[in-house]
Image 1 (cartoon, chains in turn orange, red):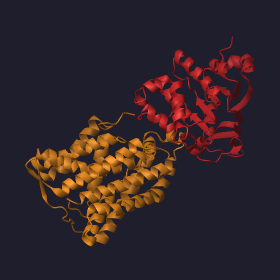
Image 2 (spheres, each protein chain N blue to C red; image 1 turned 60 degrees about the horizontal axis):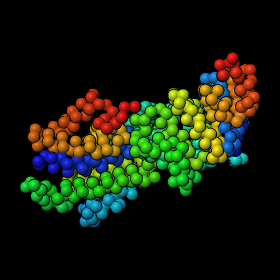
Image 3 (cartoon, rainbow over the protein chains, first blue to last red; image 1 turned 120 degrees about the horizontal axis):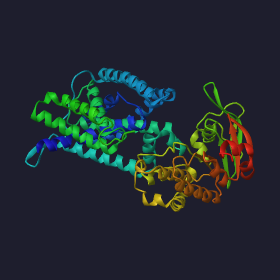
Image 4 (tube, rainbow over the protein chains, first blue to last red; image 1 turned 135 degrees about the vertical axis):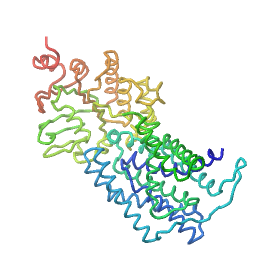
Length: 287
Length: 236
């Protein structure tokens, strides 16, 4: 039972970072390997606000979200959109964007190392135990989960029930068709990339409430987000949410039943099995 | 009125379309006849703003030159294309596809009215409004594609082989709905493999051969033209 609840709490915060990558990959068609660094930057942001101004991480989001949005919009506009215009096929864009964002991730790691140094960071906000079904859980985990859930619900409602959200999904499904209904595909892609970055950064800020992090940990989160996106199916919001919980549960189960050191290995085992058995993801449709 | 002037389209070194001029007015159906590879689809794609317009060519909508505008402004100007592959949003529902059709600013105010019109034109879509388009038959997908184009409140509708893959029964249904669309003062530029059906419904027609217009007549004259009968009507 404690594995179930612990897994759900962890998965709930994974959902956010994975939805961020999903928007960037599914809509803007950029496989962003610097996604994890944006997440870590969000975590540093929350840390900085907490230690510098005693501001709680939720308040920090008010600043982190717009900053991440602007930063990611700039990355797309100046670094990635030349690649998009140049690419003759989706495959070529994928290779180019993977190389470009891989390089970008090292720049971010270097910058964060220079600013914050190489040690591990954590802070104690809401470090109280809450008893759920006779088991103690950190209040910070529960608060992070609730905030993450609220943001996810807002995001999904926006995607499903507004004209601009629908336009984003249209570009994800078929960019040519989108231009035939007067959607500005380039601008919509930039918007999706920027929102994706903001969502990932807020995921980082929430994760930092209960996770110890350092400047170079981003790559692990990039890989986790990647696993979730592939597992759930590219462009599948519902699949992403289910996959994030699956990963959270799998990691928690392996950590408490076998060995905490094997969590990443377990995540990859899950990933490889899915790639072999159902490459389009759990919810993805074969195209 | 849509006016295409001296349009040429190149694919690398290969010239697919050579100085083609075509006009379509509101409330008429114009058919484009031609063999495979004659350049019909290229003309439609260029008229929807999907291909660069070069040299002295121009595309005008109601007299305004939109040659060098991005594709979304062609839609805003009133030109809606249903390409041969239909370009529908397969993973979205019928209703979402139709709503996206009303994404252009010109269509937003009349979205509700246009939706009612499309639903009465294709009652099947009303029954299936919550269904994902991917799971529908070819004929139903074609209705979604045309319905979506109608949602953008077009002045001119460009249709590339709309009857492709449809049964004769559905085909007849489709052509009847084209007549309804024409009566709503919308112009239709139709590329059609079934020349007999195309000429039967059209007011005028162009004949395209090797990327050039070699004939431009009323449908009656084209139907009785010896060359056209031989080449496209299976001659008798």
